[in-house]
Image (cartoon, rainbow, N blue to C red; front, side, top):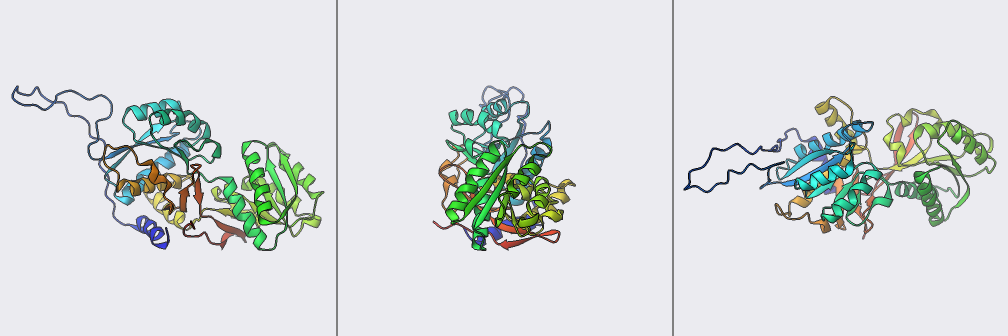
Length: 386
């Protein structure tokens, strides 16, 4: 998968004409047929059968505290259908807030051949065994690597890949000694493991790794403890931008003045990250924002609102499905083996492919926060080797 495939995504985003895919067709009420005729007059319950389209279920939160991001993902999937002019696919939305398991059961009962979503890892855990029993693949938007495998695929941005990429870049720029600030909890545990492995693999050394609770003063206290181990060349702050900006002035005091700050994929989800002066000069690895900016402009024009950054996962999941649907016979089982294509797929977030573990391997770029903006200092590769 190379430049030509990525260009195809750009052309989709730039298209000026779209065709609305056919919506659900309600079963008409029929009059009793003459005895000599044979059409059935039975009224079909639930959704009508599709004879010309694949039925896809989108499981996202459409109510409750996460309704905003869920609706943004749903909007993105519709955009992808419009932009790709995919008239052989129908997507039906199911709200996971009342219960993800119930949503999955309803979707499968109504004929879903593929599930996109859910968003939250606990919902993926509830949905996965139900889908597996029905032999329905799940392409989740979670970033929890622990829920992947056995027919469940992860499109979310995982911290391990981001940390490995930024550590490798830093090592290539002469950084040899590292330190880290990591939050308590599952994300912090996985970030710590990934950080230690990445530094060791790159030939560097971790001087200190300080955990902290996500409570008032937690990261500041951990940063104070970290300064006792200074100097070191770089510090990974495995948390969001606001937390990193709180810790940065403490990390860079005294002997840490020249310390390079490193971030994770969480930073790319914050639109105001570059406006934090304390993070000037910091590096972080993430998916590319080049095509995303085009997508966001088109999204705002259509929905009169800004998209959530994670909504691109919904768009790319549909592009993946459309590509596979070219050779997918109507009413046949979804060809799951196609998800493991070695050349991968292209989308708004760049090149990606699913490994044997079901986790999306992504081509990431490294960005630097520089004077109120972000600058790409190491572009993402356009494809994969091997």
